[in-house]
Length: 152
Image (tube, rainbow, N blue to C red; front, side):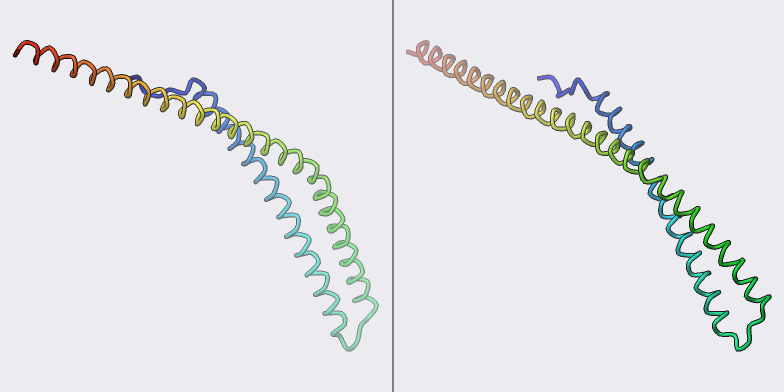
């Protein structure tokens, strides 16, 4: 009996590599989105700290307020830029998520086909072994009958 061979194994391996690549790209985009969120949180924390510092002063000069206003404006511009970049990334992220899901679906489809073919191969092998056992049994019975006729 020949060993099981899945004719589409090379395609399955190719699809697995595609799936890994698409998942990797998705992870890169998710990491980029997380870095934007981390940056937003850092900027917000710096802005809140500056507010707390100003509020904690017992005497505030106009120059201090001007510096704070400039800093606050700078932080707001950075926050807007981070928000713009994150918003721009979201459609890419969703598109990549769809590509990764589709790549996984193709792998699973081929794996199910391979499993089905393997089950069919096992059933064929078992039938072949049963047929061989039946033929062997019949040949043995026939040989025993001939041997008993010769003795008589």
